[in-house]
Length: 275
Image 1 (cartoon, rainbow, N blue to C red):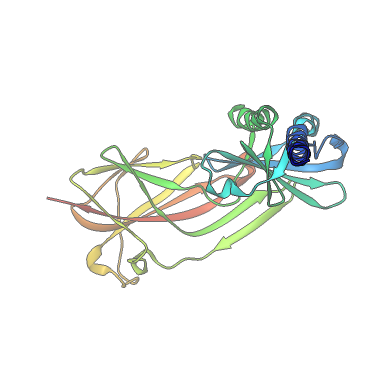
Image 2: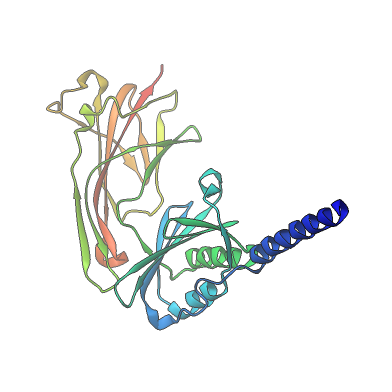
């Protein structure tokens, strides 16, 4: 009798395990019935390199989404490192859906799921292919970052005041205005860059149409925004650094009509050239 009970228990365990394996392995396709006509507009954001692309072919996007397979809920993606691509779909009924392809996870409107590798990898590859296509429409919702390269080292800068326009899917523009403290009032935000070099290279991911000005102030004028600035010599994207400690401000401009986004932006950084 005891042997029979053990057999029953063992059979039940195997049955439960089999059900779990079946459910996990079968998965489901949350977007298998989605039609291109259901999508009014779509964008994809890739990080890295922190760029947003307008998707113009809803049918191709839908084909990839139709194949995606998800399994059990799993929010451990917050502990995972890798490239994430975020698709934002505005549907014909006005609702929005956010889909993050973050292999081996798929996150739908904030809820994470384990996902089948191949379809998710194909979705991620599709986003990267769009990024690398020459005619891809990049959407910048705010000015791109400016890096200062000194002695082969890339240094961050502080984005300050900017005026920005970004083209919407319907052809209208969204206007953004951001105000910031004067660079001389940003001592707590600007990390000191020390170097013996006398030149620095300005690098902006999305090249501006014009660098309007580069100016600087001696660090003797911290907290004195009324102090007069000095012009900085600019040759292409290279500037000449002044001896001692100086706070630099770069003002750049992008042509809105040319790219679908643009405006002016101010960046600041602090360099101390050592003797």
